[in-house]
Length: 115
Image 1 (tube, rainbow, N blue to C red):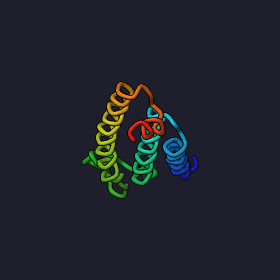
Image 2 (cartoon, one colour; image 1 turned 120 degrees about the vertical axis):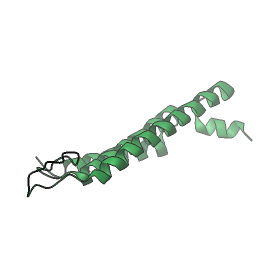
Image 3 (cartoon, helix red, strand yellow; image 1 turned 180 degrees about the vertical axis):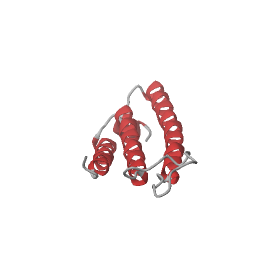
């Protein structure tokens, strides 16, 4: 298996997320773009900690000479998932409130109505 596939996929997710955030004119699509970027970063962190033939760090009776998988990127990824869930929920809540108030999800129209 190609060792760069995870890095390429993470980069692709991040680029798709940036595209959605910059060029889409719908708040829900922008939230999806931010979520795609978060997923790309999480995949990148997991790919950094991967080792071919590595043993999970929770396994205490590991045979000598075997490498352990790095636990730090896994812990960072778990933290990132929790933070991403909270920010996504907040962005969706704000999108719903903006839609209820302005009756549109287009950020340019909302910006024009606020003048």
